[in-house]
Length: 213
Image 1 (cartoon, rainbow, N blue to C red):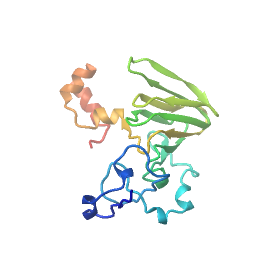
Image 2: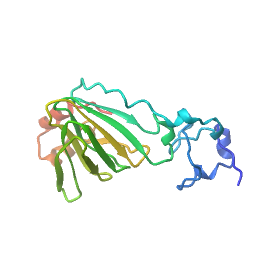
Image 3: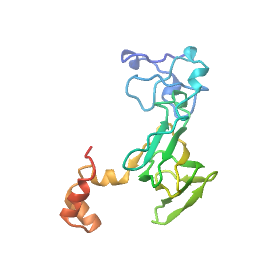
Image 4: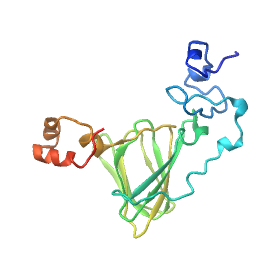
C-alpha cells in the first residue's frame, strides 16, 4: 500500500503510513525528525534522506560533570538525542559517579534497565512489589538488571570514580525521582504527614529541600 508521510498540521488529516499508527514495526528503521508536531514518539525522517551518519552517536565518549550535590552525571542517548533509536524500543545512558555519588531512588515507568559497570564498585539494587530489597555491591564487568517500574538506586562505594552504561528497552523510558515526586510536587502536607507519620514542620523542612514543579 502506498502512503503519505505527514509533514505539516494540514497533512495530519490525510492518510498516514501504517507505521505511524500500528504498534509493530513496518519499516527497517524510522530516524526521528526533530521539532515535528507533538506525537506519541517522533515522526520519521524521509528515508531517502537517511545516511550512515544517522546511525552513529558520539555523545557517550566524554565523562559527564559530577560536580553537583548528587555527585553523578547522566548522559542520555535516547531517541531525542540519538534519532536512529526512534521506534526501535531501545535507549542507552552513560552514568558517571564521583566518589560517594548517588543515583537516588527512582523508577522507569516504561522500561526495564540493565546496567553494565565499566569502572569502579557500586552498591545497587531494587525493591519489588512485596517490599523485598534485592541489592549488592557490583564491580567492574558486572551486570545488574532493574525490572520495569521498580524502585532502584546506584551508589558509588569505591575509592575513586565509577562509570556505568545502562541500556533500557524503551526509546523514552521515563524517570520518576522519588524524593522529588514526594516533596517537590505540591502534595498536600496532611497527606505526607499521615503517610510518613511525621509532623507538619518536618514535612515543610523536607519540602524546602526540593523545587516544586
